[in-house]
Picture 1 (cartoon, rainbow, N blue to C red):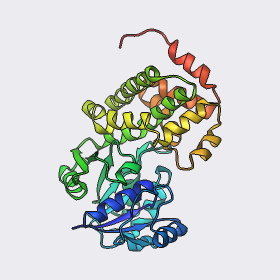
Picture 2: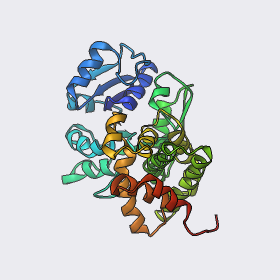
Picture 3: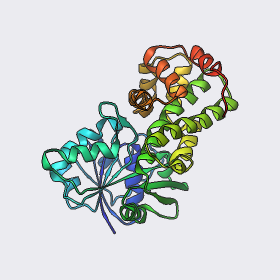
Length: 334
């Protein structure tokens, strides 16, 4: 059995911590919010996952040094905007050769790095760790369902196939099937962009549009992700797999989806800040928009859905006008 440190006590971090603990692994959870650790350790209940039964064997700590020390795997489960700062805090306590699994999904706007690239960049500073093994774990995986052992599939992605297979071995169980993929960049691009498409799908739902519209946005969303990915050197099949179309479908159709919910609120006329406040958790698609627009310009690629969502979220475009602009674009071959 493995020793696993989980950085982040949100819904995804805790759902995975619970699962891994129930599999017999030794799991310790850290949070940057001491009150979060106090609540979990005293009540045994996560406020956002009230149906989840937390095993008594699960350990907690308020010290980042403790969660990073003597662990076979470190699981980064903090929101994308906190990945760099968390890596910076954790770096001095990590060993070289450490296996790090990232489940945050996003692209850093200031560097256009994916989350594993952000972690590696931070760990490599000032002659630091240069031999860590970074794995992205991504796919159609709502924490609410993993927390109650509903059948789920996911992708363990790393250019080092042995590292991807090691993570596959540790995480896989009869209710949580793990596939491997060496195209880590493609998997992470999917994870960031599917949230933006889900915002767009939610906006359409908020406007009162139906399944036809949702299906169109999902299908054309795959096209946008794969068109960009191809220019970035990613494998086309990644976008047709679990991390691509699989994650896109679940994020665009499930009411567990924060991005879909936020989009629906935007479509009903709420402002960005009002939508985020009502969702009550981090809406990753909103944070991904700046990087998406930079990548659009850098690679000179058409991303009409992402651009429409950005104009609504960040430029104040009305959802009704955004829909009209998408539907009246010049005719083209599929």
